[in-house]
Image (cartoon, rainbow, N blue to C red; front, side):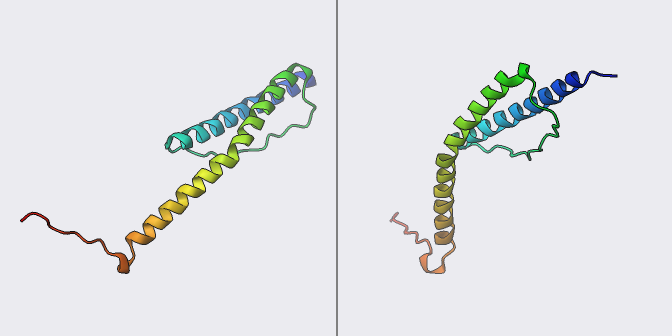
Length: 110
């Protein structure tokens, strides 16, 4: 039978691995948005952890938490940029479909 502390360590290690992958994806989404590229958004799953974080993993968890704080600080600017882009897109869409503002072309070749 496996040692409960080993099982807890493995469970937490897997949870931190998943958290790190999710964090990397979130950073990539923000970075790609800033460069105008699309990124796939994946759904997050809450890990099932019933034990305390093992002491050997505290430093790693602390580093991941620090990266999360940096990412969280970047979110308001990213959200504002998406809202601005959405507003411009909406205005352009409305003006291009308005019957009162049809495009006019003038042939200047004589």
